[in-house]
Length: 341
Image (cartoon, rainbow, N blue to C red; front, side, top):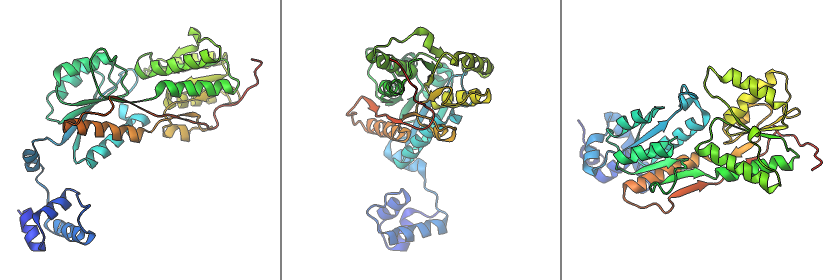
């Protein structure tokens, strides 16, 4: 088997230069030299000895990603546009940083824990974890961890989180709807924990600033299970006649409602205004195009990996709880209405 030294001797360059090209470190290598090395690598069908590289560095060069799903909501969580973009962004940054990725998804935190504690990875990225889930993992797993979109209480234990200005995004969207004359606004979520709960808090605050009080009847919880979804949508359709706007906690639910309501003959936004959250591909594909709250999921994935890699190398985070900015995206699914108030 040809070695790096053999190729370096053949090309008349240093072994370090050949190694740098193999591992993508080409900023200080001329394009001509890179091309010569790559041609020789192809000629010899050279495959790097990753195991040997790992042993010399004392790192596995693997980052684990554990995603807690919900059996009542997802058959395949990675089919959700938000999670697919997030995982794609995480994988790309892991690869850029010179690492490899292992992924495990389950709706059972015990199953996740039993598996991830056996992984020889340098650190873990945790997605979809509630604070009790994190406490269980933290008690067993001692390597660096970074959470995504967590609202675990700070008094439980310190943790690093990359999240979003969820409260502000919901506050801004509610304020926008109020500014368009809407007063009968339904807030739709599928739970009142974590992200959705914080978004509801933002909704309540915006109403209060307009001198309005959030009513319990206006908080609508959709049952996400596949067998229950049709009956939930029928109930929501009947309830929609009492509102001028539906504010959904995700683009997915906004798109689902719009399709169902339109199939029943409802016109959007003439009969009902609808908004989403996240600005996934769904927001651009539905018609009318969805007014929503944009977040930079690609940036979120990148920051998660950057933070974890720094921790692996014992560099303390400058921020322990990052809240990425949000932006209103005004499209066509909201209609202004006249109001006397």
